[in-house]
Image (cartoon, rainbow, N blue to C red; front, side):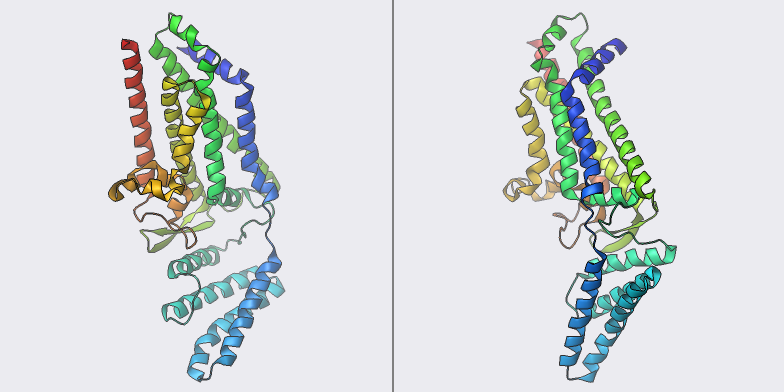
Length: 371
């Protein structure tokens, strides 16, 4: 078995397409670090200045003093935020912004402020409170060369970036599992004295271990580069999440990243299992790839989701492609499509489907042996 696995490793390494795809994965991980740095501190200043201006106009237009009183507190904190910005006082800016968010929440609950939803305001308050209480320096999204821990957190928050990772891995699996048949190596397998099941197990082990090892190497190298640019950062940096649709809490960025990596591993298992099953049916690379693409993009088609019974939708893998959104409980801009999507359920669903696909593959192999 060891010799057989070694032979598969040699085939994998010799195939230049695999190296190109791993390189593409590495570039996709590092690309945002160098080219998505569009943070502009002047925009934040302009944002608060405009809020202050509009708030003052509202106050001047009010006739009743009782109504003016309600807006005085937020005006005070807006001025404090801008004053702290002008002084370069980051701690003072954090405290003033925290008080401002609390005031906005009170005004929203009283029906005097229309802006973010209550849950988003509560998430902002939880995030800012944690920074103030723990004395952690704020890292703004998309600032140039963020610390490694913040970079990974921002990277996984991008659904487009996550989908890119999964697509590249779908390409890798399709190339790996159709390689033998495309190069006619499967004909040697059939006349080899080695039992077919041993050959298939060796192929599975070699392909999966290659993918997981590649991920480990790529992530390690990308992390080292990010650390060399601006350090590791605070591993306890807060990420505000929503549990059960209404309970706001805070997890560390390290916990957030680890949960994302767990989902990545589960998706790799499912994509690899599906690719293996399709390779037993056809040696066509495009057919194999389309099978993975259908799963990864099905959640974007409302008509397709409508074909799945309402009570069963949370138990299908389609809704866990944007897994980072599942982890944080959705946002105001991208809410969860279903209220019962959780990390535990998502991991269980992906692992369960992977096992089912592998069992179907075993059944296909047994059926073909009887023919």
